[in-house]
Image (cartoon, rainbow, N blue to C red; front, side, top):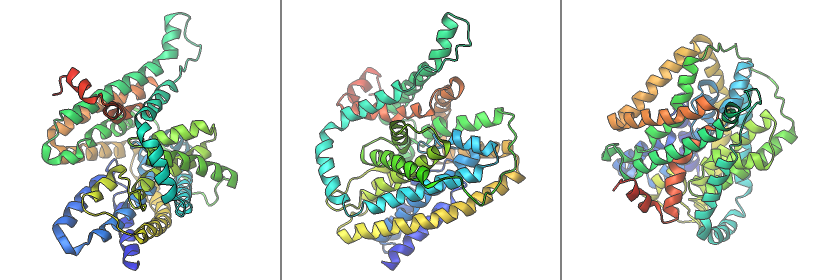
Length: 437
């Protein structure tokens, strides 16, 4: 038990070292670590590797708020946090936004811990009932995400086609983003140009291009000057706001963790609209809870007795090396998550202060240039010229919602469309129509 907790804390420290590296997903780090552990053999037993990965995913889920708030480099689970967080950042309240997301993350971990006694029986029954219906539920989610991108006209354009275009350009941009990213997803799944020896990083260039690079380019072109950030000693978040944010965020995160392909951002969107969120504090707390429950809860499903669902990249990495064999392992995993979550929260407060010091000394545009160079170096170093070409194409698609005012989440078509078609038995036929094989 003690060794398991120490390994989980080690995973948190590893995650904290990479928290300042924009768009470097912890799955990529875990993949290299798993390969190293396999080569090392008995030096790192698989059960200890499992606890190390638990600490890493918990630390990452808490600490990836830092680049989302201060560097505006979101992934698919933090993309919704960016706009409210930037509003806080421009009001000298970036630290407050980080703390709100951290509180949401802690509340999400509390929900996972409270569900521990009932999770095995509940999940077995739920999975048996819903598994035959996953395909049409996923199509319903896609339809809702697209249809909820309603027209956003202001009635300021002259009557006629210009007013029609002002109202409908956002929904058309959302549809274009979804379909183009879905086409890119098909190409990457069926005929990728990423080298075969780094196939594990196949989607890295697409996600960097869809979600990270467009925001950085937007920062480079803007003339916004960041004000000095205030480190607040108190927080304007009454218990009612925290509880409501916790419940809605946990609902979205649990939904995303359980259903294949659905990410924390999509789960947070569904839960946020279902609970009619209209408060920035509530929104940031709920999104913080949603992404933590999504990342950590999806991995925890792998440890649940009689369930052992493989959801998320971390579970896929571990599943080829080890499988939990006793209920005791599940309870150790929950204890490791709680400990890692508490430690990660205090590390979040510390690293947020370091980030504030960084942006006070280095101009925001210079940070954006350095971030862009680092992203391109990571993509090029891991996936070669083929990956850089994919990143450029994905960036063009990712700029559509930035320029035309639709949701960036529509870029998740890169996964949703091909996998929804595959789950319906239509993927291969569509790939033939596209002449991909």
